[in-house]
Length: 174
Image (tube, rainbow, N blue to C red; front, side, top):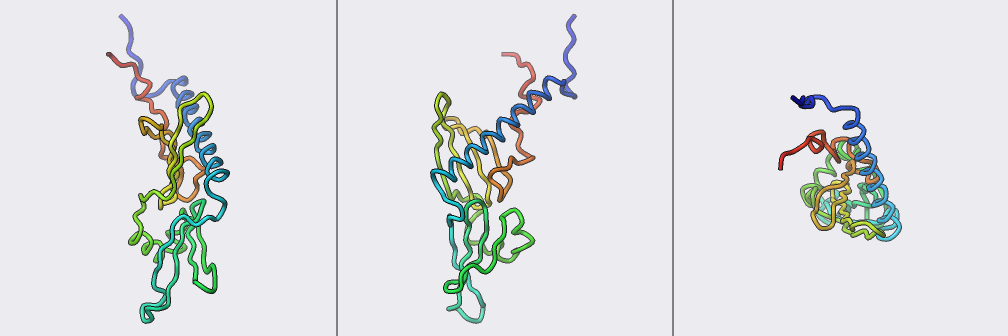
């Protein structure tokens, strides 16, 4: 009689496969970020801009909230220039009110940048960058997520993203 493998704890080989899939996802995310930086958007390129009131009492005084590559929230005054800047990952406590205004005018899942990466001898991948500062890499045809970044840091893999799970490696009956 054969024994079934322990389904509660993964074996060392399973752990190694999960870690290899995570490393591959990190490499894919780095490749996508470098591709976007080299071919699509230069550093500090403004991807989205909304106009907000600077002073509630003066309707003519306005400021601009901008999302710039790679995931930077900027507060800009028309003739003065840059007033404040923060990474989208830290903007929640640095520019809390401004971030709330941005989310009221621009939903966090709004795609600001799209690209398709064609690499030799591999299937193409689709890359999107949204208003929350998250870079997603997907299979071109199936749209399966291959990598997801941390908000505001498109080059860093999200710790919550699981490229391969223990249950993906479990044997299945067909």
